[in-house]
Amino acid sequence: MVNIDNVKTITVLGAGVMGREIAQVALMGGFEKVFLYSRSEETINKARKFIASGLEKLHSKNSLKEGFTPELLMERLHTVRDVSEAVKSTDFVIESVPEIMSLKQNIFKQLGELSPEHTILTTNTSTMSITQIAEHSGRPDKVVGMHFFTPIPLLRLIEIIKGEKTSDEAVDITLEVGKRLPAMKGKRFLPVIQKDRPGFIVNRLTIATNLYLSWLLDYAMDKNVPIEQLDADLGGITYLGPYAKWDYFGIDTVYNVMKYFSEVLSPEFAPGKTLNKLLKEGKLGKKTGKGLFEWVDGKLELDKSKKAGLFNYDLYMALQLNEGCRLLEEGVVRNYSDIDETMVAGMDMPGPFELGKDKYKEWVKLLEDFVERSGKQYAKPCETLKSGKFLEMEK
Image 1 (spheres, rainbow, N blue to C red):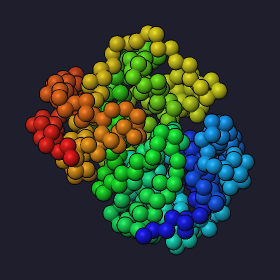
Image 2 (cartoon, helix red, strand yellow):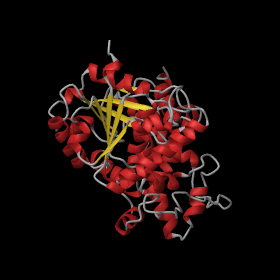
Image 3 (cartoon, rainbow, N blue to C red):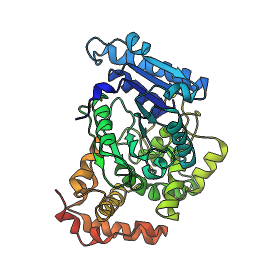
């Protein structure tokens, strides 16, 4: 039985949007010390202000644990700009640096050299191979995927992913740490993904839709359709439409993820010309104040009154259903209920099987029409979807 009380110090590497939110929930989880590392003093200062503000808001709503105050928790936060200082006495590391494989591998090489032997090393990669990251650490048995979903203080899901050499003990400790991290929407949901495949569950499904989103974005820009109208097509379902979310996460992050998928799944995932143009111009979304949209003081004013009428929600979900069926074929999960529950917990939206099981034949036709129109062969319906075999795999 894992003794979670032995994990007293948490280190978060990377103080961007995800890293600072992870550090905040680690403080809220009651760990004695939380180290937050970034090379940039400006990023560190922004992170401290963000965390302090977040804790104050939660405290005003009586949402912190009894006996916890923002002042007490901020005393436990140690911001540093030296990796060695951040990890030399830590029990548990959560890496949250940009989605660049060589960068992550270099970080894990340093972790293997600098952190104590007992330390569990986790990566918040959203898509990349845990096994390939772990092999540079010198201790792959202690490396685990720990994929969070933003806003982390709100959403329940953390995907736990085993690499090829990850030990059961490392997974068990990671699960116990995850359970300690509070979420405003309820008890943490921590599925353990046994097979290390690109994108795991949630991002494998959502990145599949990027084939459509990237193609549609370039199409709309060619036709001079205002991006606000295109994003508003889905605005009635979620507050932030798909393109506003790209800006929120960072255009560079979206670009890097799609580039990675183009290497490991299909060249058709390569970022489109609009994303390439934004990256070249340094327009990275919320973090720079401009991307596809204008951000003022970190906020986005959305006009949802006019819609482009181009976005097809059924096609969007059909792509997710098709990718979910591929996960079943690959043995990443054994039943589709797990996929749906994971999507609800991580994306706060319905899973594709619940929506598509009664109209999958219509969705197969949508996918075939999209392939013909776009030339994206990866979107062709897989056999498990076309045959309806997935219907036998609910539980």
